[in-house]
Length: 247
Image 1: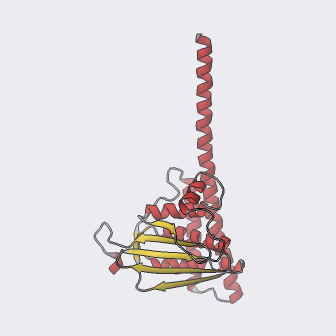
Image 2: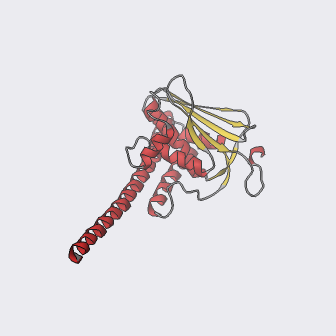
Image 3: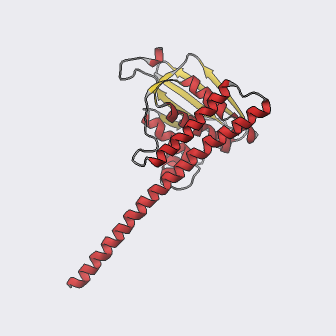
């Protein structure tokens, strides 16, 4: 009885080792897929932005700054891949951010991608400026992924709205498109992407995780047609005691 028991335990150990190796490999493959996603989007946006500027004969300072922001995002994706101990949405540098300014740069960076798909991209900011504390590149990563999803899957006109809700101390960004709408609730799409089931929800999953890291959230809101995604971030006092919302 001892020999069969030893053989059985050997098979069990081998099976457990294979399972652990598969899980490690799957996690690494997902990290690579996530990095490829986060490289492809910013690099494409930068290239098409340069092409649009060349066609229009207007590589303005605002457009060049927007392209620089996307290239910095691409560099961040490489850093995430080469530093496996750091999660792909880790907040690395916290600073005060003018959310309207960042959003305008993000929209400007993605105008070329929208034009290449025959779509329009419009930004409307309402009311006073909104300041948040967080990682500038991570928040740009979140807004860029929301814009990319709307451009790729929404088609037609993409409208971006931003405002500061003073009573709730929340900065709110809405991205509306004219596509078929979401095929599943936001949490379900994010879970599926994190589990490696398809690529369509990967950008949304990353954006959702970044929002959570900053104390915010991403949710879907009612819309007459297409998808309407909402990113909310707290616009309150930082730990140091400052009040970015009033600055």
